[in-house]
Image (cartoon, rainbow, N blue to C red; front, side):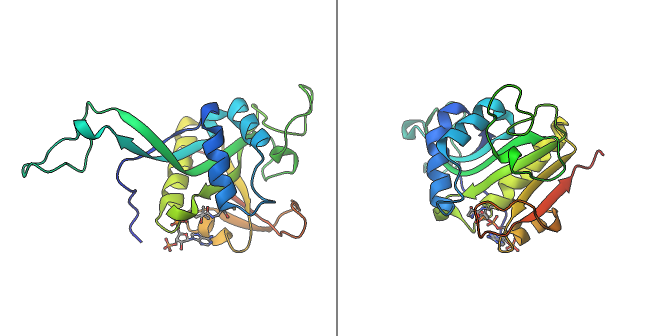
Length: 207
Ligand SMILES: CC(C)(COP(=O)(O)OP(=O)(O)OC[C@H]1O[C@@H](n2cnc3c(N)ncnc32)[C@H](O)[C@@H]1OP(=O)(O)O)[C@@H](O)C(=O)NCCC(=O)NCCS
């Protein structure tokens, strides 16, 4: 499989204004009982936007397209063109955790400022990835692996944490193992009922 992105792709941190697009991609990609609620997506975007990453396909103003030597529209946008729209096609949502592996609390929303168990913990040393999804129309084109590789690089380079952890079903675990994650076996996380998860982690190289 060729690991190249579609033309005009861009990877950038997600922000509160992306919430509707994130929910749309998540709802399309995940079964209903596994897709994050709008409330949880908003919480993560507010608590730790720097840990949430998206891959967009952008459209540029056609009038400004550069021409190649044959007078045809160039593949690359002219440096002065402006972005007129972006379509979100892949999403990573995460929080920081004090534990080494994903916990139920890390997936939740704190019930108040003193809630030690639930939600993002800024002093945590592990990034807990709670959602990785690609719009089904764009799956199988290396987008998920390119975004995830970029994410690992960013977390590593910025020294944000010493580990990235996530849970995945038996079906999805090989996707992460190919990216260098270690599969530690069955997770204690049991939500939603009936889904069996594996704990996976990636220890960052500077440790
Ligand atoms: C899982 C998901 C993120 C993968 O993204 P993608 O862009 O389709 O995957 P890629 O095209 O980058 O695939 C990379 C490699 O992983 C493999 N792969 C892709 N999806 C896989 C899956 N669900 N299970 C196992 N392997 C998978 C591919 O065959 C490919 O292998 P190759 O490099 O040997 O050819 C995407 O399919 C998705 O959004 N699925 C629905 C939501 C979901 O289940 N997310 C994971 C939650 S744990």
